[in-house]
Length: 156
Image (cartoon, rainbow, N blue to C red):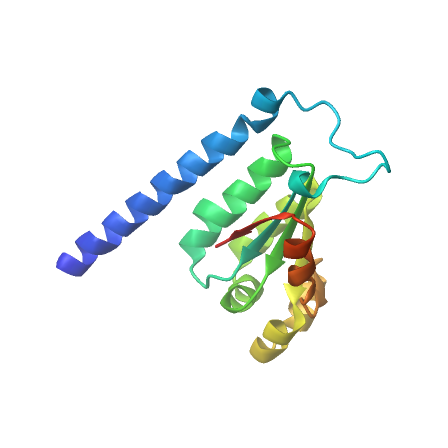
């Protein structure tokens, strides 16, 4: 019984933290009065770009945190450019779960860029399935580029 209580408490804390994060960044454009987030060269500023790194193999984390925040970030224009990177156990989970596949299609249709780590996907034998789902499956050393260019990086 104690383990169940601890598990519930952990989820409550995680959801609470996610709500605070969403609230803080949800009002970002209002507080900063951002009209044009492009620099003089017409490119997006790194601070207006978000890379979400999804590594968890837990479906509840996917639906109630990663996918919900990713979809709403695009829908409500909290970020100008969003990339969702499927990395590690999340690749296997996505390839096997129809509900998550349907949700990822909605995220893609909303305009989020979808990528998956080829090394991870190959390890789980799901590269072809992720490609079928519309993800760009490639080696993800570019995560280093995201960090060096100053893009916001959020991990789950």
